Amino acid sequence: EPSIIFDNVTFGYDDDRTILNGLSFEVPAGSTLAVVGPSGAGKSTIARLLFRFYDPGSGRILIDGQDIAQCQQDSVRASIGIVPQDSVLFNDTLAYNIAYGAEDADETTVEQAARDAALMPLIERLGDGFETMVGERGLKLSGGEKQRVAIARTLVKNPPILLLDEATSALDTRTEQEILGTLKRLARGRTTIAIAHRLSTVADADRIIVLDHGTLRESGTHSELLSRG
Ligand code: ADP
Ligand code: ADP
Image 1 (cartoon, rainbow, N blue to C red):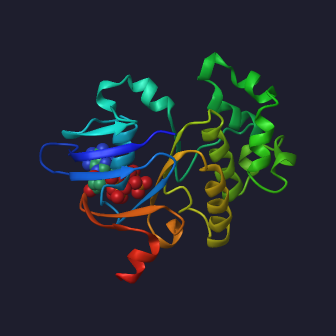
Image 2 (image 1 turned 30 degrees about the vertical axis):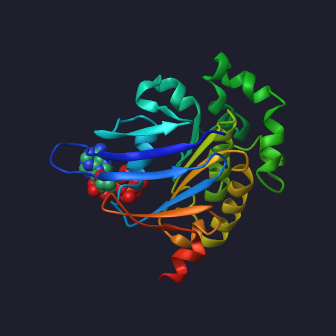
């Protein structure tokens, strides 16, 4: 798994306003870093920079020691799987929706991937009884089931980096706990950045950074942050 480093990153969408202000943090290979902070703090901006929707104004972002601004955009993106808050599913089978994530890998078509038996072990790992649902159509699924499909779609390419952007914040508390458990299992063997609104949802992260107005306010483990109030 690769390490991720933000080294003194400054960024603004326009010249008027700085969104990230000299931000530095490190995600050791195979670990999970959570990014929490109020709405507008710049959390999703971190995700957008890592995925190279934008490049930093100054500073560097390193994946495995390589400045991603010097890398091919496609190769950076191929190494990162994103699970967003809301995913749009096709009104097609669950297998099709998951296989869609594999489409551009090695010119595999959705249809080929949907027939691919390799899909099943992943689907089985998503949770109890999920494999019996592969023929179900996307629009019938509950919020939690949809999010499992989104996770499977992201992981079908086996990305070494996992980027969770408020991946559970649209779910009710019980479903959120279930999906957090699934994500925890599936994050093993990957380097993960989990963006979250609430500290309680990232208690398992190896390290948490608290962002405020694009600046790192605090960092530590969940219990360290709680004990500091
Ligand atoms: P968070 O994810 O913490 O809620 P964001 O990273 O989405 O915050 O946004 C940080 C700030 O950047 C916000 O003030 C937001 O209004 C601004 N912002 C986000 N996207 C854009 C954009 N495309 N153009 C200009 N400003 C943006
Ligand atoms: P979230 O990160 O909460 O899922 P977004 O990233 O879409 O949502 O937007 C985060 C914040 O950035 C919101 O407050 C939104 O209004 C603001 N924002 C998004 N795009 C722009 C933009 N192009 N210009 C200004 N503000 C934006």
